[in-house]
Every structure is written in C-alpha cells, then in structure tokens.
Length: 321
Image (tube, rainbow, N blue to C red; front, top):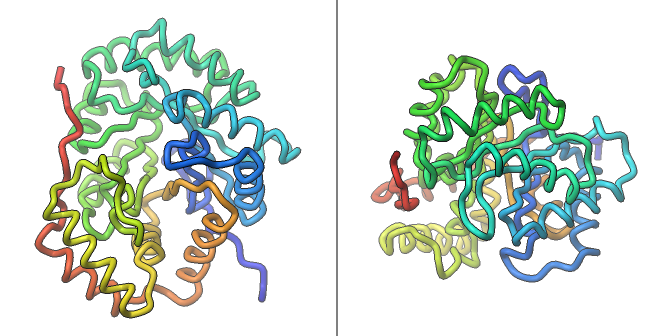
C-alpha cells in the first residue's frame, strides 16, 4: 500500500499545523484502567510513527501521572523537539480548582519538569466553567500572557463543556489573547452544536480542537463509564445505535471518529489512546476516510436512531461568576 499520512491542519492564527487525529494522553494517567509504562511508550511511539504530531495532557489526569508518562514517552522518541506539539493545562488539579495567577504560574514550571520540556506549545485553562469567569478574564489569562512572553508557553487556550462560556470569555479579552479553544462532546454524531460556533471562532482567529468524538464512551461497544453524566434517555439511544452497528458488522466508534474528522474547520480531533491497537485503529479510520469516504448509509441509520436525543447535553456543574 502507498504510504498515506494523516492530514495536517492549520490551528487558527498560531502557524501550527496539527495532525487531524490528536493523541489524548489522559488514559496514560490510568483514568480508564491500568496501563503499563511499556504499553504507554509503545502507543506514543506508534502514534508518532503514523503521523500524529499533537499530544494533549493535563496535571489533573491521574494526579500528574499522565504528564510524567507522556514526558518520558516523548523523550524516548529521541526526535527533535519541533517534531511534535504538546499541550497541557492549568487550573484544575487533583486537589481542586485554582485559577489564581500565582497557582497557574507555578503550575507551568511543575508541568515542564514532569514533561521534561523547556516549553509547551499550548497551555490551556482547564474546565473554566468551574471557576470565576471574571477571574479567568482579569487574572488568569493576563498571567498566561506573561508566561508566553517568558517563552515557557507558545500559545494560550481555554477548555470547558458549555459552549456559551467560550463566547463569554472571548468577548471580554483583547483580540489575540486566546489562541485556541478545546471543546469536548460537542462534535459527535449525537451532538454537533460546536458547528454553530465555528464561524464566530474563525472571526476571532481562534483555533479549534475537539475532544471526545465518542461522547466519553457512549459511542463505543463498551458503553460509557458508570459515572457518565448523560440522561438515561441519551444513554439508551446511544446503546441502541451501538447495537444497530454491531448487528450490521460495523464499528460505531470508527464511524463516530470519521464523522468528527470530516469538518476541516476543526484542526484536530483528540482521542484518548493507551495501546498500539487503539492507535492503529484510530489512524486507520482517518486514512480510510481520506480514501474511501464515509459509510453514509450506516451514518444515516445511526443519525435516525439518535435523532430524538440530538444535541442533548448534560450539566457540567457550572458555577457562573
């Protein structure tokens, strides 16, 4: 077979080009079950070999374990630093939330040490709906701008579940303050509300990363974890869609990932991965999409099953400032 590589997509005005599939490193923190260091290293190595250049983590994942394991795995690659793009986060920790300037400034030094890096390409304020949005605007983001000037971070991002929070913050900071947003669970077959926000984000020059195309496990044969906050109605509809695909001999997770990858206004789709097998399946799905296109028939059937719960989200425990 001719060598195919993952598509690289520009990220807003940053000048970065991200692989269309990004490596979500939260599973390396053992948040979805055990993973050996050997398996973690192999997954990162295989992802990089197959064209993934974007790796995302957070000090919150596994109480700093994800950052440590990812740092070791990237170092083990033995390739120049400019060959990969690393994003980590600040403000959310095992101990709780702290978006103060003092804490996020200390946070990056801790993250760089764990990641064994001199700088990260992106530092994102993690799950900002749990903090005071006025603090994010007036204290946290100005602190991150100072870190940008210091060279410890190249670009600044924000992450949250409710889409309205992005506009709230972006409308209140000087243009160019926020380079990228990371949204999750809003660009998948059962919820594509992120699409409505894309023209606005484009007008602000903000890059877009979308995570969790499988709706935190709902669009997988294993199903969502016990703690999944979706309604029983949404869970049941997703289970019906999973069963329908299984009966047809189709893989709903592959279909869901491909659905998310079709929109090239989204720079990268982050998928949590912890084994070579998962890496190979995800990359294969992306490459198959590029050559063979979507399985439109199955997508249409799944869309019909999910229609009654389309765009139904769940509360994130929002605390508005």
